[in-house]
Image 1 (cartoon, rainbow, N blue to C red):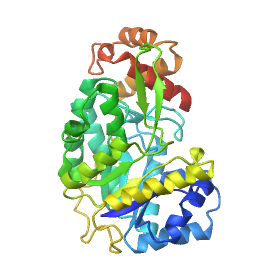
Image 2 (cartoon, rainbow, N blue to C red; image 1 turned 135 degrees about the vertical axis):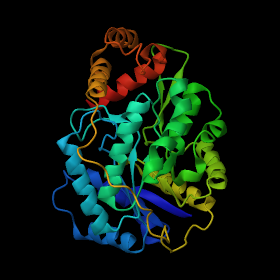
Image 3 (spheres, rainbow, N blue to C red; image 1 turned 90 degrees about the horizontal axis):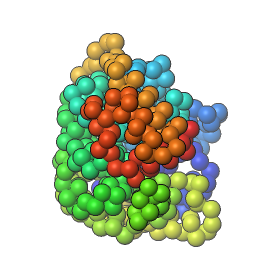
Length: 368
């Protein structure tokens, strides 16, 4: 099992990680290939770094902006697939992953992933999109579980839905442990019980990170855990990592994530490196120089043309995003969503936890 860092062409992040790279402690790199478009000319040393890990079979791609469950097929999604195809061939990506959910922003490179109703309509849409990702990447494809949930039922159903979603593409899961930690705290669910709801044999990758606490105004006694990637890894997440290593028989790497915006002081940098090293110490076989996979990717069925669309779902998503962006309170948002028919639909917005709806509003408004 290999110890990986989530790295991008970010001077602060790279400067903080450089001692780990120079000492050979970073077994693999996870690269967000779709976050490069605004950077202009790419320096040769960055390409050399990617090639070093790619040629060794230890580079994986992680998408951010595809918006897997968007009810409308966008030109930007087609272009995203072109970027992925080129990156996968050029950099020899071993596998590629994206986030579960749809993006809250109309701007393709802004937004945060939001959950969707888990029904036959969204299952068909997600399978169509995932097949397109696999065809473009020509390697294994996977999805990451989502941190933000509207209700305990939303949390309970995600594992089974993800399993159904990835089966036709012979896909896999990233089990993001801090995302599960957020849900465990926010809904009062034991983290081990939560992990057991996922198809652990399908997990190829684990994520760990830190986050932040946020007071709820609708429930002043409550503090919400947010997946903001901007602090040290909680002790409980390390405990979850130990459990996951033992119960995910096909896991290949663990990835440490951290936002560069919170790497300001020398102490911040030392904490970043200490958390990575602690993660690495927990991994059996860390330091193995071999590739992540020793066999070729499984055959993936080719997607049908044209891309599947769901205009009704797209209209509901726009209604939800507008409510999140424009409502002054969660109660106002619920009333607006009920008038639009989402309360009695599969969205079941009347059953949403008010504090989590408030969190979704804050997330959407931040990105807007």
